[in-house]
Picture: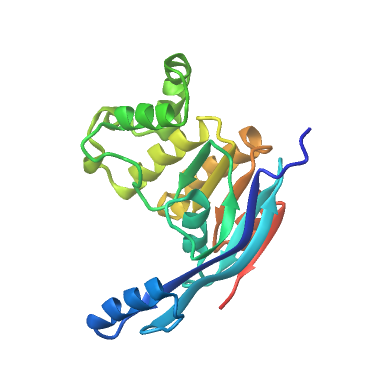
Length: 225
């Protein structure tokens, strides 16, 4: 078995610049180009110097108060947000449930969105055909699987997104509190599926629920300030 970690996060930081006046953006661009180091803005840190590794078979829960940078950290890990400093070494096949409905084309049906997502994850058509019925059955959205997802409720989004994410054999599963939108019975169903079918799949899970963190994780990361 390889000793290389599934995910490596090194000194990851994200800082946002806040400008008081429009012309300060121009001054800052000039200063950056000259390399003077002069600031014409306020810098607000969202995530500061986070480092950790995730090994095969591990699951990590990320907990913290609102505004502590949990979602920002996950976005940098997935690659949808560029860090200010630091680096991420990630696996090729990541299933991420971040912003509700992200990655879905609102005009495509649920079935079309699932098949498109599975194809993007590298599954062949025969593999997609083999799991399509499982996804449809797990999502439990009935005839809406063949309706445009713009007609879905938030709960239906979550059902389809989770069902799609966990059936594509990800190297890493990332969940950012998306399950909080679903009803309690579907949440329980998801937790049971993770326990029984994806126990050995590396996971990063953002949650406010300490009981869920203990149940689903081998380690916890607490973000503060």
